[in-house]
Image 1 (cartoon, protein in one colour):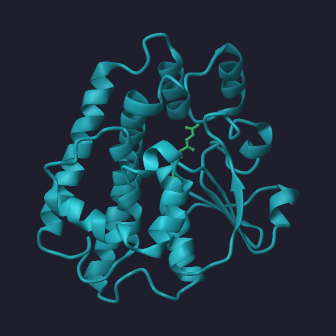
Image 2 (cartoon, helix red, strand yellow):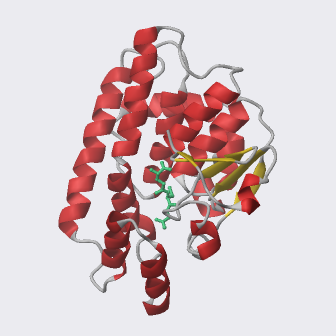
Length: 257
Ligand SMILES: N[C@@H](CCC(=O)N[C@@H](CS)C(=O)NCC(=O)O)C(=O)O
């Protein structure tokens, strides 16, 4: 579980639930959805990723990779969105967002793990198709990033995206293939079940619907995934979707979602 012990007075003194997050970030959407599903009051610390508000020594003192989201609950810092939503489900048990059946619960964890494992592919697709050029770091911000970022995978990713050629075509095609495989699997499952793990709306649905939303905004072809489209439309009717996803999207992307 992504619980951190930081020597950071500023966050360790925070009371209640605080979320460091970004509007378009799929990882932040899943945390906001869980907070809204559970009716938890939270304080927003919004970071504009395009303006690199996450690339500061202050934020790296909270999240060692400078990523969103970060949850702080009564001074305890939790990172990794799938760990955060699992934590929230334990800390605020009503309504539960995991099925009572043990096999279905195991499936929830598999889908959370799958979301975590595929994050770099989603990031690659998003940068290659939507945000990459706007997100290219100039000389100065790359220098700052190199100073702050200790994670070699993220450093290499942003260096490559910021190079004149951007991310290589080969990485984009590989990412696209992984995403198609995941959504095909999801489509097959949703042909037989209402929700990803059965009859209960769960953390698995909450972890995956933001991936649909962000990929859809970047033009990922979802037309052939009929069952996934039906599932998405059902989730769209939930108040938490409106509050945690739609209201945080840039205006131009709201209509498509
Ligand atoms: N595995 C992490 C991934 C977090 C992540 O990559 N967040 C993205 C937004 S969805 C971010 O902060 N990007 C900013 C950057 O790469 O500098 C999680 O699930 O929390």
